[in-house]
Length: 138
Image 1 (cartoon, rainbow, N blue to C red):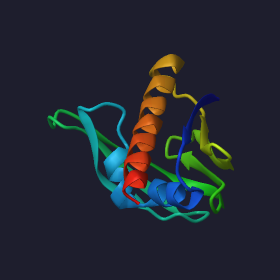
Image 2 (tube, one colour):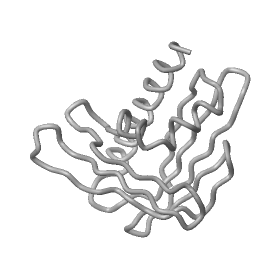
Image 3 (cartoon, helix red, strand yellow):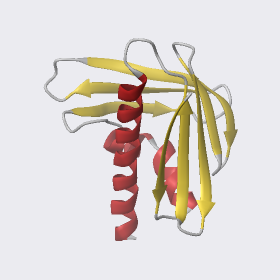
Image 4 (cartoon, helix red, strand yellow):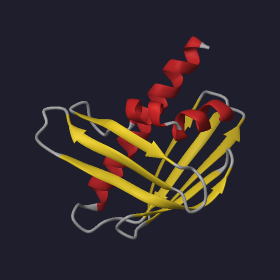
């Protein structure tokens, strides 16, 4: 499995809310500035589905990223299986210096593991920026 991680300076409740809310997912779920997520749906429950449309801003390419939830522990754990069968586990751990998010995922075979780790880390870094920019306004 590939692992990415970040630490956010925000309350766990806010981190969780911004991670699971479609209106926020569309704000942070992209690996680079020339991509975006124009659509997100999320049914956060065991057996529930999620789907994010990820698209190049210039309209040249888009794809849906989706899956089904296999385990949910409020403010602590989200596990799911991507539509292609790969497994993902995300932990949220409240610590003295903030919330640690760790994502572990099965790699796909089209891109190098290093490239996949870079892309998922970039998305996680965008989430951190989004959370901390909102947290500053609280």
